[in-house]
Length: 56
Image 1 (cartoon, helix red, strand yellow):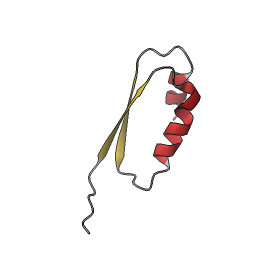
Image 2 (cartoon, rainbow, N blue to C red):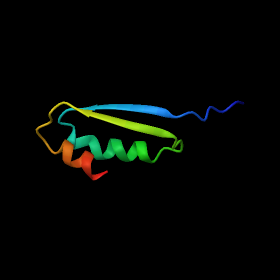
Image 3 (tube, one colour):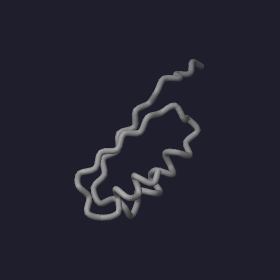
Image 4 (cartoon, rainbow, N blue to C red):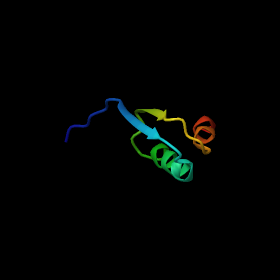
């Protein structure tokens, strides 16, 4: 079996997702494949989404 060791780009769009964002980020960070770049785009959330993003 051939293994692909390339970099994976993860694109995450957020909007007022503070209730679930910590769990989503922790899930991504706990994956066995660690060769990734995470891009997060927020559309002017009015909850704590940006605070959570900035903590990571």
